[in-house]
Length: 283
Ligand code: AHG
Image (cartoon, rainbow, N blue to C red; front, side, top):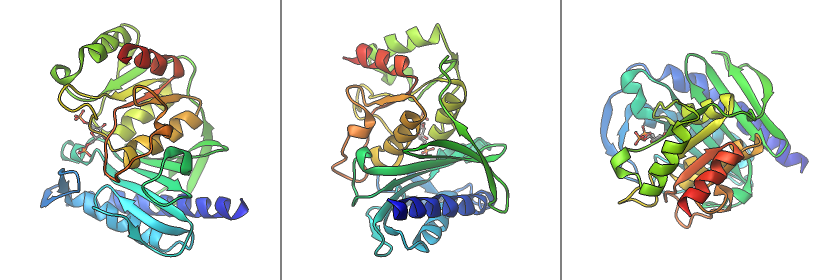
């Protein structure tokens, strides 16, 4: 629908405008607050600042009705618009302590939250690296933009390279299952390790060079660490639209329907062959 196209373009514009403000807010906000978010993570000041900036930008859009953030317990109503927007305001924010990359993840749904990946009509992430870049996906394709400090941007279309070269797996080896450890050993023989501890940065490497990113189910935490609605589903949409694949171990992450806003899922994303091998190893 034409109105959807306009409203999604508004969301991407708002994110591109918010990104330099979020980045400018890192200085002086790298310390922890006394608060924890809905899933018990200690929040740092930059998490809360990023959430405020995004809520203000998305709240100003006619198209946005619901807003849900990893940093807030429940869904907020921002207006009467038909779209629901989810945000992980500062993914990998603990990286700020070491001045390493972080990101923002956004999902745009034409359904009330919580919603499945099949209700996504767009998704995007911003990477705060040496440059600020935004990767934005709709059903028509994926575009990578370099964002200038004034929010202006220039883009080029991206797709997942056919020849994979990198991998990045989260968690600690003693917590991995034997099946996942076997898969990791297999992958290590072929690909180069690239792991930063921020999903946005690690998936961005996969999208740039080809490969596989995973945060697996763990021995004592089969659901893994990453949040279905805020992290897994929007990133799966971007990777699948770029020509890759995703799985929770059994099915595409886009087929996972979260029953609760903050639930978690194992995540495997990247080139189709590597994702299918993960499914076989975990079956
Ligand atoms: P946080 O936002 O608390 O820094 O967590 C980051 C997330 C995700 O971005 C990343 O892939 C994963 O946690 C890293 O976790 P490990 O340090 O356990 O590998």
